Amino acid sequence: MGYSIKKILLISALTFSISTLAQDSIRAEYPSFFENDKILKATLSFDITNHIRKKSETYSQGKIVIYDSDNDSISFNVRCRARGNYRKDNCLFPPIMLNFKPDTLFTTDGYLTKLKLVSHCQNSKLYTKSLLEEYLIYKLWEIISPYALRTRLLNISYQDIGPKKNRNLQQLGFLIEPLYMMTRRTKTIEIKGEYFKDEEINEFDADRVAFFNYMIGNTDWRIKSGHNIKFIKRFGHRREEVSAIPYDFDHAGLINAPYANPAEWSNAKSVTERDYCGHYRTLDNNYHILIEEFLAAEEIIYQTIMEFEHLPLKSRKQTYKYISAFYKEIKNTKSFIRMLHSSCMEKY
Image (cartoon, rainbow, N blue to C red; front, side, top):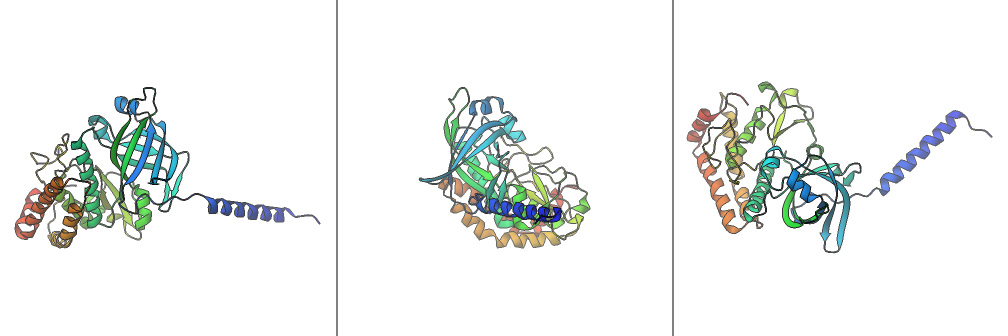
């Protein structure tokens, strides 16, 4: 008995579907890189000599091995290049973009094609301290906002596989969650673009970002140009309700990195001097709500700082002192709001 073309097509479609489902069911899925704060041990092999000397944005072939334990590891081919406009020009060892393409790394959080790795900048304890403090700032933002890029601390053994093969080293670093993974997790969508009209920005979310950056002494951000800011929108919300997500905090006064400077649009005379770079508001409603929001988070922020044992106790106490100065300010509400009115920027 012969088959009609329709039946043949139906059988082919079913066969393809079953095959696809079978492939999906056996596809390797690795644990999330961001599900907990346990430090991960890793080995990253690539042309380190070229990375240091040329700080090239051209990818080089490499391999990363991640150890869940002494006896359990996973290995991936990866391409590496320098990234980060300022740090690429000012660091001996600039941050790295890890690119898993043409393969894709599937995790319980979703797929990964690219990952940002924040590296140590220079081979010294001072720069290791700066890296850990920036990592800690990301954790503090997670306390303040549900829309935060997660991070994961790594203890990395760098292996130079370039022609020189003489740049092996052991350093700390941390991974930053890709924005598309965060939007999937928080049921939001990324909004592309750098320049938005004032009325398109969610004022409250923007003011929260401004409060946080003031708390950590960071002026190196600007919503107007998308400088160290990503944009998202909640499902169902209007275009006018674009929310800002901050990242890259290495110029914060809390860190006081050797290369850091106040932003050119800031009135701060030094990195450690706080300067409010938020938008001017004619009404104080947002300010009062945000003051209460930050006060509610005060104890968990102090606890997070003091329990971050990767930093020496002396550094944790200094960080505590810097943040407590902010809290002393906002508890004097009237004086603090007067300062906001005098310091606010007319535009984002």
